[in-house]
Length: 242
Image (cartoon, rainbow, N blue to C red; front, top):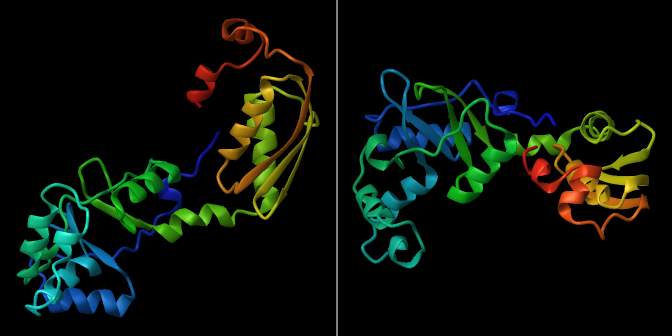
């Protein structure tokens, strides 16, 4: 199946700053362009880190001696408390930035980038080339753009890529309807073991919100051992490679 790649959704007109940019200029840049973070690059355009509104807030909070220290109360990665304390006295983007930056490549899939964002709790990922140079940036809203795909486009991909090319079914074996990203599969497959595979593959198509299973089967092969099922159709090991 063809998953959307980062170079298809990323913004190539990306704002950036240098490590010696003063605090106030960074704050002004974020406010003027209504963004929550900006990559910090060196003279060769290689990404050194990312400075965000959160990084600026550490500095601001430290101006009040009575302000609570968030790095003591929040659960963070080892060493992040020291990094937060360092940022309270930061005067430049290089002092304030989070480094190394969490990045992605242009040929990564949207799903891979989404997992990276969730794992690191960031809202944007600089996109870099093989040399570490900045190519663009991808945000949460960019990744969510796959859910704005037209229903007809999703339906065509499920029929062509899932049913015909992957499961080797005749196009009209299964009726596929899509409404607001919700897919309904109706029809009868040859074997029972093929039903969950068809449902799972349809759910992996970019833009699918959920899948309603209305599939039946002609032959109940659930009593067969996995090796015997492999002789009759697609195995789970094969499926995991897709």
